[in-house]
Image (cartoon, rainbow, N blue to C red):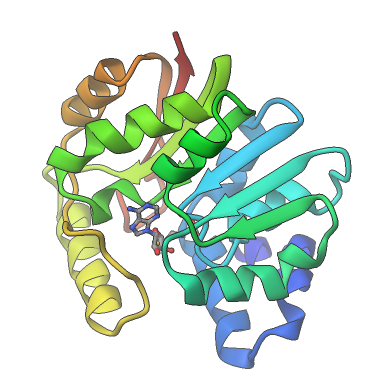
Amino acid sequence: MALSFLHPALRVFDRLSVGERLFVRARLLSAPLEEVARRVEGPRVLDVGCGHGVLCALLAVGFPDRLVVGIDPDPRKVDWARASVGRLPHTRFEAVTVDALAQREPASFDTVTVADVLYLLPSSGWPDFLRACHRSLKPGGQLLLKEAEDDGSWRVRKALLQEKVMVGLGRTRASGGLGFQPREVTLEALRGAGFRVKEVLKLSRGSTTPHVLFEARSV
Ligand SMILES: C[S@@+](CC[C@H](N)C(=O)[O-])C[C@H]1O[C@@H](n2cnc3c(N)ncnc32)[C@H](O)[C@@H]1O
């Protein structure tokens, strides 16, 4: 875990301020993004809600033949991502919604990743969001959805408090919601959006956050 802090891919952030450099390291320390990156398939990847681009860095550094596109509605985040991992020629970052991108570039990606974004939307907004992810994928494409889940434990209460602080401080921009859902709600939303769920991996071992990863395929 501590090695995550020194992950070589994070060197792409060395041009950012000390605060942002520390932030991306803390982000990798606190979320199992390496586990997400390991599972990515295919040469064209879209990361929805990319933030600073930590997952994009894991996907792009050392993989020059892979196109990595990161999108986020928060232009500050996109600026940080462009100024760091975005300097690699096989990456692209845009301040655009997944809905707008899916309209412009339908069926374009082998894999779509979404890491810790859904909890910022009200659950009523999940179907449209997930359907847009589906439209972005080539037929049979892969969706990797990393969230924290409401497993009824103290972990979810701690995670919610932490995220309220992040949104309150203006570090994270919410999209009308802030809350974690039980696993069944996410599974139902994925199926409703046209995905077949292949695997659900609980990744909370050794962590104070109830991380979970859904691997699904568009059908
Ligand atoms: C906790 S951060 C995670 C960033 C990145 N995925 C990571 O794992 O480091 C949540 C991100 O979701 C973005 N976000 C908020 N609402 C969104 C939406 N409707 N669509 C896509 N991204 C959104 C925020 O701007 C923020 O960058």
